[in-house]
Image (tube, rainbow, N blue to C red):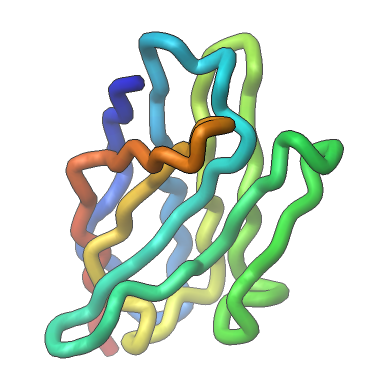
Length: 117
């Protein structure tokens, strides 16, 4: 599975961005997908996820609930992260991932999101 991300950039506080993650290859075995982020000097943290094997249930980090929305377009094999009300503390490199039914995780290359005040 190959994942290609797009949509990062430099925005101001309160702005919105939409990240995309296009998947190709053997995606039939994917049971979960989502987004992590890593800020400088901090550990990578889960931002949002979709459990495909659980009917598409979603989960979010407390820090982004109500502001971020994860979604997927099956026809395009693409996952999105809509980020509204961006804060300076959302600045990080965002990575999408897909996890297959063997527990193996595939990662995108990462996209930088920078929020300035």
